[in-house]
Image (tube, rainbow, N blue to C red; front, side):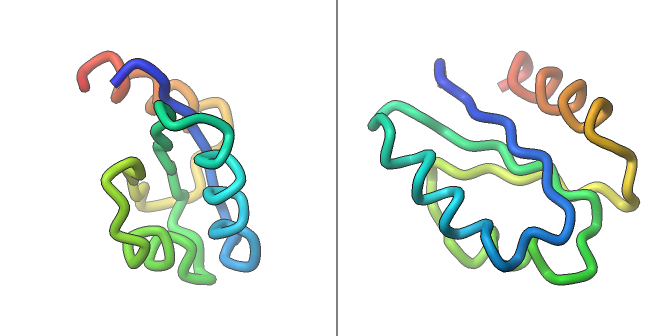
Length: 80
């Protein structure tokens, strides 16, 4: 996987599907890593229900913030 878009989320249920669709429509070689901070609106469940091999998700137990989400995403991308 060479092209990864990291998307931190919190309460994005109303727009996550549209956002993912718009990102993946840009190029065929893109993958998305969602880092969800335990959204109470079910954002993570919506992402998991998409069941798309180009979408990965990390579910965090609490709202830890944007900066740490990107750090965790970069770390995940280097390992994968």
